[in-house]
Image (cartoon, rainbow, N blue to C red; front, side, top):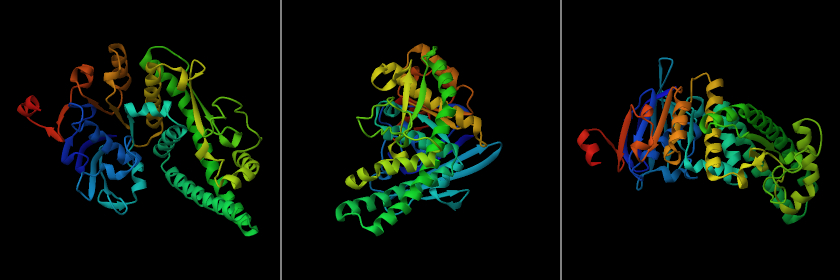
Length: 392
């Protein structure tokens, strides 16, 4: 899949932007703060329904405006498709495909992208929620229907937590116990599916991340990923439950059986705290290099390479399993962090993708093989003429 045209209205620092794109590498160049990342962030929004830089949609809308519009013309196997989303400051967002109304959560069915940016170091170095968010976004791109399952789980979790807080405040009454058991059933049903899908995804990433890491670094440091599940007694949200210790399950059997058993074990604590203590919302993934956790042991360069390999592995997985061609691969301000050898290796690793979008502050940071189609950006404007570029 490729993006042939991107149009923005009142998005970030762009009043209006129209950008034509080509198959293969597309390089966006401009000084820091001019709007390069805003362009690729907008495209990513179509596939993830969120920003890699901010947690709220309102930050994406140009100051003083009520809404921002992202519109992209996509092409796959000779077929054109127009995908668009209107991000509203108040009220629900709206989405269309080929001018027909759809639910915004359905957009990932039509467009997939994988972005690597400096912020992605947080996946490796940050708290467990960053890793859960990474794997869930990839799950939705890989299997879009899981977006509904994840949304249903979040709503169920919220309702169950409300009941637990009410029970803690008033003392558990018989009718509340019956209601809690009903929510348990729903939590286990939805949560078990999420856990199984996450575990399968992590397993599918294991070889691609080894290949991607070796291709960028030129050596095999044994990158690995291991799910850490709260239903097996490892609570990623508790510092007293360190990653890698006692991962063996507290029960045997299928995921749903282990989930139910873990809920039963935690019932007293949950009622005391008014909080659901077991489920995919408290899971994590252990990242390792050379059999040591990346977080806390790896150097900055190793951490950067691991995070980059994680995204390249994600793109490879989507490429292998997708019916819509390659995902659009986006490298945001990546090459400045790499030495000449790793720049060349990364350029070779991404050369086979249908489309790669790259941002850079300095043109010379990017290998020449990736600069054939270069777009210059200045102060929220796409520079068209030689004179504009010279004075941009």
